[in-house]
Length: 134
Image (cartoon, rainbow, N blue to C red; front, top):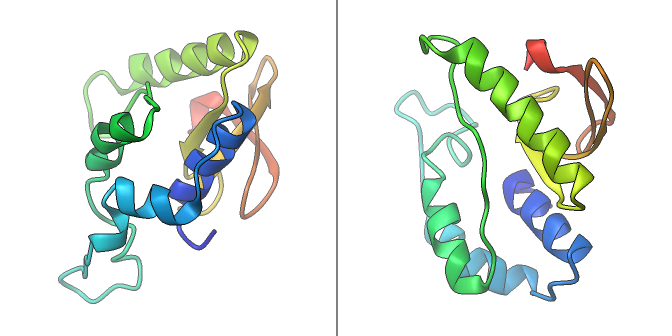
């Protein structure tokens, strides 16, 4: 999907056996109605917005997303980095699908596994990302 965030959500839902059309996912999360243009007219404008609403409105579509968000400038960044890695490992071990941001280029990726060093992912590209580098 062109919107990799919704592509990951849709893929996760399909993995869990939840049947939902792409159109309903776009509309039900409000994404279909978002127009975001960055001040500098950067082409990343459609993805450079606070997507928290996707999590809130997803509950109306029958799913819930749990995650960890942090930025390198945050004082507790290292702790959040480790918390995210532990959450992914625990979730995958329990059979829950996972996805993350910027495992390679700035897009969303499905995380399908892990090893002692990091995440195994697929999406725009497929690869391995060390959890301390994410």
